[in-house]
Image (cartoon, rainbow, N blue to C red; front, side, top):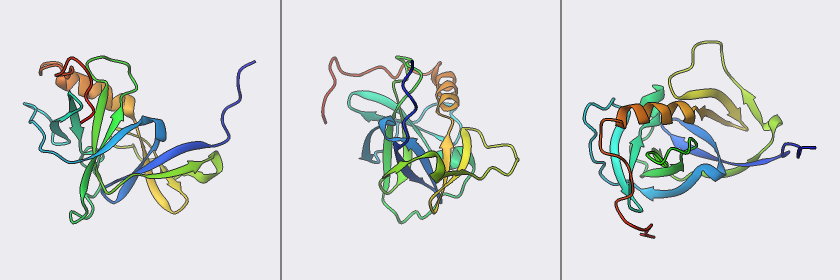
Amino acid sequence: MSDPLPREIRCVLVPVGNLRLLLPNATIAEVITQSTPEPVAGAPEWLLGRIAWRGWRVPLVSFAELAGTEEGDAELSVRVAVLKALGGNPKLPFIAVLTQGFPRLTTLNAELIIPTHDGKPLPPGVRAHVLVRDDVAMIPDLEWIEATLLGLLDDAEPAESTESSDSND
């Protein structure tokens, strides 16, 4: 007999623009200060380039730009949330997302997540719109984002580690 689904899950609300991304806590590898990204030739506006992180060249995504939401308060300190990629592709082990402020930990259950979809087509990279307590949030379609990034970066240099071992910078 299989284990029942957990009653609660630890999540993070990541501020992007005027909304928040809702992600399982386990997807966040680290939150870092923003560095200048290395441009990717021919990339769409939402792919800001690649940043160096722990010996990797990680694609930096503006989720607000991708999903067509408002950018939010530019006065807030801009950070980067490095996410563990879900696809298991060695060419793309991590994805970085531009964020404003720090992700907020929360523990959720099914009753606390209320779908708010109005029937209109969802923007690219968005799996669902939800209300979490008092926060409007988006659940990103990380699989779509990964597949799209792999297609965009296929012709660019691989994102493989630039070091022989993982550093703890």
